[in-house]
Image (cartoon, rainbow, N blue to C red; front, side, top):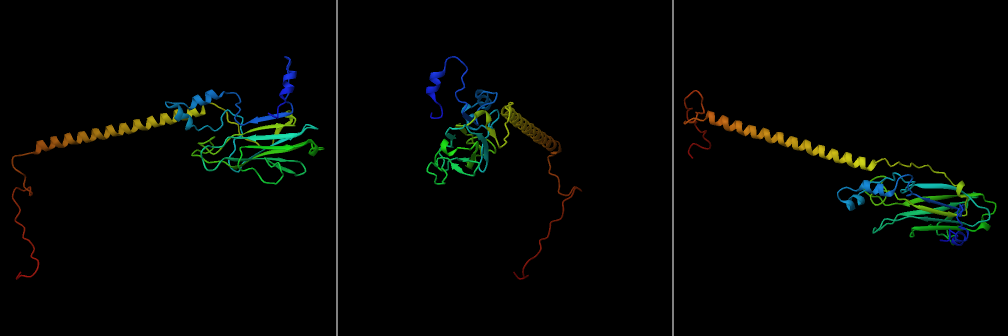
Length: 274
């Protein structure tokens, strides 16, 4: 709440176009470009809505990004407002009920090489390892003669789910939000490129293709089973018919010439006197 001057807003809202936050820059990975979140959620839902949502494979389609994984970092260059204090906040959601939390770090670097770490308000040089909200405050007196600084978000550790490049519990990436005061909002620029995926029914198309493939496979298995059953049934009928046609009142001799073979003589074994 300290980033926004609500008293200023209340005293200056008079029906005119008002831009009270030209010194505030906010970035949200989850902000949608053109689509709305209802369409994205609906595309996940099949017969079991809760199961569909929990098993989603959303990779950030339609959102601003970036989404970060372990070892990655994203950097912005922020021009400063002369004479103003600098304040930055980094916020993210960590996966619940697990032993290791998702750990991001906020780092501010000045042109002279000075580094400020998130929540290191005593300048101990130790990074935050517990909280999911990190902040940096630099007074205007320490920014005299400095025109810009860089802000870095680092992925120290993000839990890995069953799916690669998926957002949240099912994947290995998470999103975050930044709020910064004391900068020229229009002059903020990203120093790191990331891909912004468009939402074009990708999830729905994938799910439909998977379903079609599954049903096609089942149909093939059923067809094979029916063919096998038909072959077995035909073979049984054929054997039964063949057996009936060849059956006579007397058994056939083992010798087809019509007479019995002589009795076989057993080979003697052991001593003759036994």
